[in-house]
Image (cartoon, rainbow, N blue to C red):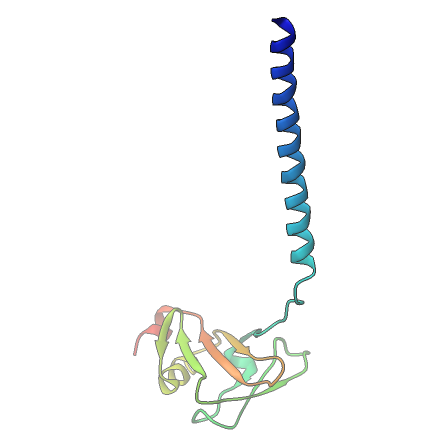
Length: 133
């Protein structure tokens, strides 16, 4: 009888070992397939700037020139029909963004597609002065 108990115990350990081995193999396969996937691409870039370093045209269209610091190179970016404007998290019109940006040197984030240099979003930091209209 002790031999029967021993065999049952050994069978349990074998099943446990096989399950552990199977889990390890599945983990390795999952990790290798993730590495073999397509390379990650940057679909949007951001210039963290300020209103004093960005030239906002009178109307959305044409070019916007922006740089991150006084010594940094300028980026020339173009508007398109899909460009969006924000003050903080609030979507606003371009006219409202431009009016708020004229109230002082505020943080301005300029998001664009690095491959085409087309603006996707322009976001002015939310401040009490920027929000008041």
